[in-house]
Image 1 (cartoon, rainbow, N blue to C red):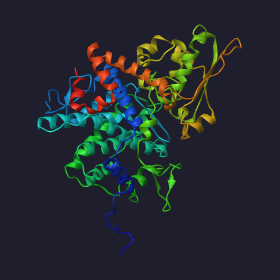
Image 2 (image 1 turned 135 degrees about the vertical axis):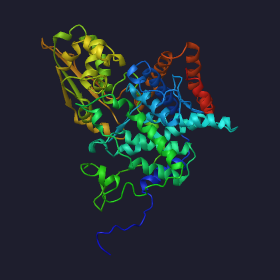
Image 3 (image 1 turned 60 degrees about the vertical axis):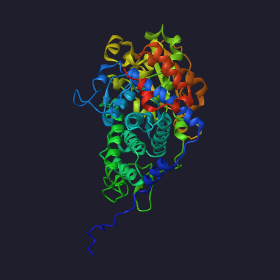
Image 4 (image 1 turned 90 degrees about the vertical axis):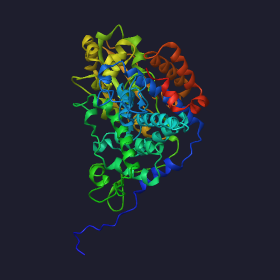
Amino acid sequence: MSANVDLNNRPDYDQVLQDIADYVLTYTITSPEALDTARNCLMDTLGCGLLALRFPECTKHLGPIVEGTVVPFGARVPGTSYRLDPVKAAWDIGCVVRWLDYNDTWLAAEWGHPSDNLGGILAVADHLSQKRVANGEAPLTMRAVLDAMIMAHEIQGVMALENSFNRVGLDHVLLVKVASTAVCAKLMGANREQLLSALSHAFVDGQALRTYRHAPNAGSRKSWAAGDASSRGVRLADIALRGEMGIPGVLTAPQWGFYDVLFSHTNKDLALKPEGQRQFSLSQPYGTYVMENVLFKISFPAEFHAQTACEAAVALHPQVKDRLHDIEKIVITTHESAIRIISKQGKLANAADRDHCIQYMTAVPLAFGNLIAEQYEDDFHAAHPIIDQLRDKMVVVENPRYTREYLEADKRSIANAIEVFFTDGTRTGQVEVEYPIGHRRRRAEGIPLLEDKFRANLATRFVGQRCAQVFALCKDQAALEATPVNRFVDLLVI
């Protein structure tokens, strides 16, 4: 046989896909901590979406593709009156959840926001529940939503632990697409072959580049990219359930597979297999680890690597607020990931650019004592030249310990420290914050504040009685888990 002829022996599905499928189809969630955290995560994620509805740049994206479209048993978008097909509803829910960069975060070799998957999960669960009720069947309950959230978090987060997609220029929403595909296919009733097919198509898709998150191209696509990815997961699950064949060797196929095409050429950190192909490194089985350890953004709508910098800046505000024009230098001591992602000099072009700039996110609370979403907008920035004056005086340096402990499994700190130096030779002393308020180590301190955040976000959209009703239900683990999904979403529509 000629050496130039490809052998057409169809392989088994890549083991990575089989492991995800078997986890989703066979794993039983029993961890009380994971379920409790998922309930808090649901509250926080929905609240972030409600708050985003105050911003026209977000709401312009919402609604049906064709105005006036009527969808039987259409999935609802919380905080609106839209009833959409599940694919567009997933897009819209994911868009509002991510718009303000305020929902949960996972930080490892790769970064991401696992609650982005709620777009697909809630859209599918709401649609299916309405349809089941109409057919005289039992609807899905919110326990199914919490289980799907835990599994989506786990898939996205475990794959992120040791696999850096950003180092080959790919955006982390790839993992949203994969996780949403898996859990939405399960909710829709996929068998193992259908789920494997759907997952293979998630990897064979063209993948988003990270360029819209970085200078000089940072822009608002980063605010809807996850909604787009989650909705694509719903679409691929639907395609697979219609009987579409999968691509078993999508990852490992020589020359044409994901590893050779998109993952190997510069990713020196990844495991090199004997045959010379760099492949995913998966150091632990799927369980409930990621949900139990997820990071909440509680105090600031800011890229997570800057959360502790914001806390430190708020602490320093009383010392510097009356001496802003006497500042000679501001030293931000941080970790390598923050320097790589969000350290910027020069003009910031838009709100999305500003909420990914550690200098901007430090300058605002130093000057004003807080950081809220409106302070990223063009009009606020233009009205306060002191922000850029402070940015120009900032020096960003790496602390190797911060970088090391950022990746250590028993720490996973996200440390920043700030010190302000004045022209008269005095200084504030360094204020260091190693673990943000949303870290697992600070759960007891953070959850009451997360609940306050949720109540405030509910109040931006609903009357007091409805806010109290929704909050009380979300606080009651057993009652929430037993609630039909369609009845839960009924409480969140206008």
